[in-house]
Image 1 (spheres, rainbow, N blue to C red):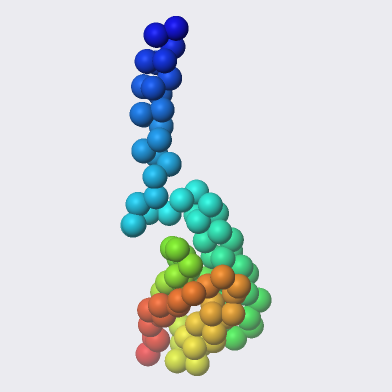
Image 2 (spheres, rainbow, N blue to C red; image 1 turned 120 degrees about the vertical axis):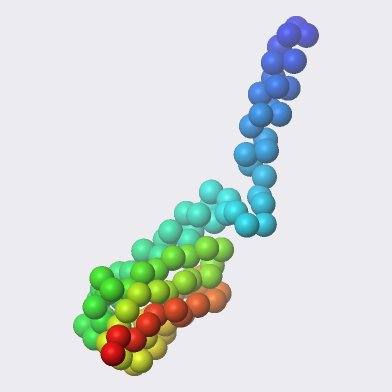
Length: 101
């Protein structure tokens, strides 16, 4: 019986730190939620005829969306940002899209 307790304690000691939430990391649930937000934003960008969505990159981390890439006009950059802001659950958008001249 004592061996089982030691074995179970060793397994828990090994596995539990993997469940801890660190400040600079996401939980599995957060990762899944952020992936859904990213997918929603990319779909909306593709549906927008004024944008070349293949030139815009979207990353989401803890409800903050980072837009990057290149567009032809400032208006296109604003459109992409507005699309990202309108996705449910997005708390912040960092727009790093560059305008090609």
